[in-house]
Amino acid sequence: MRKIDRVLFIGSKHLGLRVLKEIYSLSKNTLIGVLTFDDSSDTRSVLTDFKHFSNYNDIVCNVAKDREEAEKIILYLKPDFCLVVGWYWLISSKVLGYVSSGFVGIHNSLLPKYRGGSPLIWPIINNENEVGFSFFSFTQGMDEGGILAQGRVCVHDNDYISDVLSNLEDEIIKVLKEKYIPILDGEVTPTGQDHGLATYCSQRFPHDGNIDWKKTAQDVYNFIRAQSDPYPGAFTYFNCQQIKIWRGRVFESPYYGTPGQVSRISSDGVYVICGDHRAIIIEEVEVGGKRGNANKFIKSITGRMCSIIT
Image (cartoon, one colour):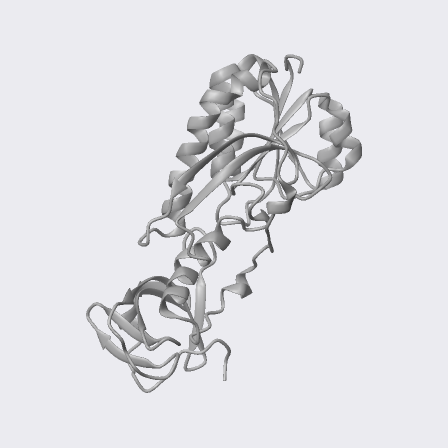
C-alpha cells in the first residue's frame, strides 16, 4: 500500500469529534478538510463544536445538506483516503472507487458480529458481557470490508449504555493513536472477515423502546439500560400516560404477581412485576417532559404498566 497524503474526515457526533481532534494532532498536514452534516435536531449533535474546532485550526468544514452534495464535496476535494465516523448516508460505488486508498470507518462491534444498525444497543439487550469496535474498509456490502484493527471492553451488569460508550470511545482513541500513522504509511493490511460468522442487527427507532413486561426481569433491565441516555429511552404506559424509564435495577428475590403490575412504591423506587416472577425496581423516570425519582410520579399501586395504551 502506498503512503497516504490527503485525508478527508467524514462524520459527526462526539466520537467523530474526538477522532477528528486526534488525527489532527497526529498528522495535521495530511488533513485536507472535514465533511459533516446538519444534525442539530439530534440531542447528540456537536455540530457547533465541529465548526469551532475547524475554524480555530484553519480547517475547511463542509456541511452537506444531503447525500448528493456530500459526494460532490468528496469528488471536489480529491482525497486519497477518507476516515468515516458517525455517517448516516450510503456512499456510492462511484465515489468508493474514486478514492485511491479507500474509506475506513469505525463500527461499534467486533465484526463480523452485529453488522448493521444500532450495533452497541443490541449486545446490551442480549446481555453480552463484552462489546467492541472495528476499523474496517468500506465495500458495497453491509460492514463486510477487511478489518484493520479491533478493540474490546467489558460490560458490567451495572453499566448503562453511556458507561459503555465512554469506555469504548477511550479504547477507540487508544487504538487510533497506535494505528493511524501506520495506516497512513501503508503499513497496515486489512484482514478479511469470516462471513460465515456474521450476525446482523436492525436499526432501532424511538418507538422500538416499548417495554414488554412479560419478559424476564433481567431482559427488561437490559432493555432499559441499553436505551438510556444518550438514546431516546425505554418506555411504558401507566394509566394511559407514557413513562420513559431511565434507571432501574433487578430485585433479586422472587416476587409474584401479574407482569406489569405495580406491586410496591417505596423510597428506593417503584417495583414492577416481570414475566419470570421477579421484579424491576424503577428508579428514575420521565413523564410529560419532567424527569425525577419514580416514586414521585407513580403514586398508585392500582394501575399496571403496559406496552400499549389500553
